[in-house]
Length: 195
View 1 (tube, rainbow, N blue to C red):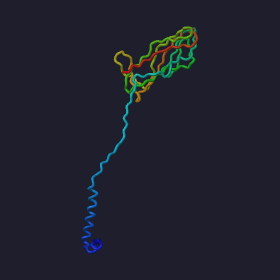
View 2 (view 1 turned 45 degrees about the vertical axis):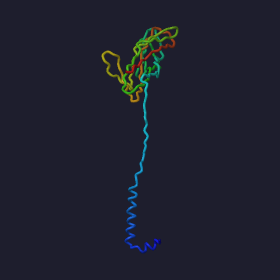
View 3 (view 1 turned 60 degrees about the vertical axis):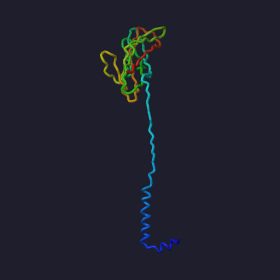
């Protein structure tokens, strides 16, 4: 069959109708094709934080500094906020004082009790001793005091978002009359009870 002869012998309206039918069917073929299934993914992170609510570490030791003893007894008190020393009686403080500092970790708004010692003994040369007392908790921006029922010891709440907190401790050293010269050392325990 010769298509050129057929095309030339067919009326023009037949060719137009055939062309229109083919063009009309072409978009329907595109529209009626089945949709392909699509899969998309996204990543997320799973996270957990485990804290050890019973952690407490010493950051800095309590230091009463250099002291010149005299024939009259006296005291040296370390301020728990500034670390400065104040001497009374016949004692002369020659500085280098510093508060003790402790750090801990819990979670925000966790409550706790902080227990300080009442009295400790510092021992020096030849077994000479001095006592330290009046242990005092300083201001701590990471914890705030909250009401305690009755006469119970004060309670504190962790205010920092991270749960990490620090606090400072000062005390008073009782220096005896003609206290023997030398280095005096003593240990003390600070307890944090998380509630």
